[in-house]
Image (cartoon, rainbow, N blue to C red):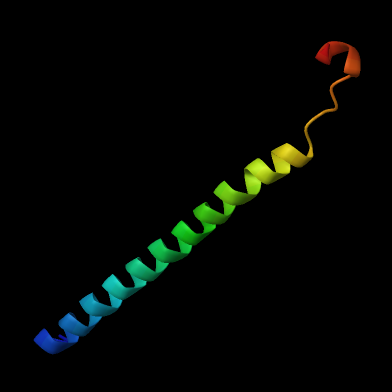
Length: 53
């Protein structure tokens, strides 16, 4: 229906879209990996001085 060239264009577009999505997901995962430890560190409970001795 589209011809060989049309199918090739669609495949190329699909590959670019997949790589772009993977890039976005990797960026989100990297942000989460950076943010979560920071948040956990900031919100850790205070340890009373008696327990530290």
